[in-house]
Length: 141
Image 1: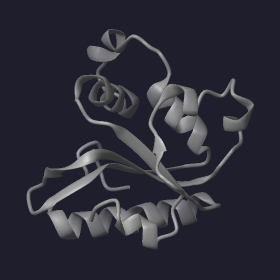
Image 2 (image 1 turned 180 degrees about the horizontal axis):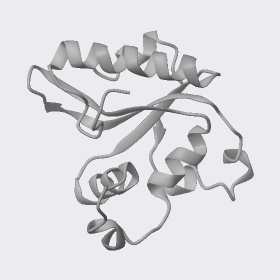
Image 3 (image 1 turned 90 degrees about the vertical axis):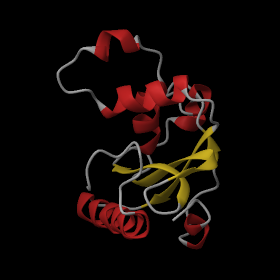
């Protein structure tokens, strides 16, 4: 599974994974969009089987707020020794430390049950094709 798969699934266009694109102070970006999101990088990386440019699949009731949580300025060192490292910490560290261009796309889905079901379908497809989850997903669903 790679980013081309999501074109057939009627996801949004790929958006640059940059703070100014998701800052809630920007009125255009404060709109609440509920759905499933996918984060990709600008090249495919080796997986256990095959390769993929997908690094994260998730669901949320507010995509702009969730992506902003990953991107908003914060001191990653404060979270470094936290007992349960948060997804935001892992994604922010990857975004800061790796030399990849990150992008995000989403598909609108209402209702937590619908979003969760679709997220699990996508993760299962990825798992089936690569024998592992995307690198920034720690668990299935």
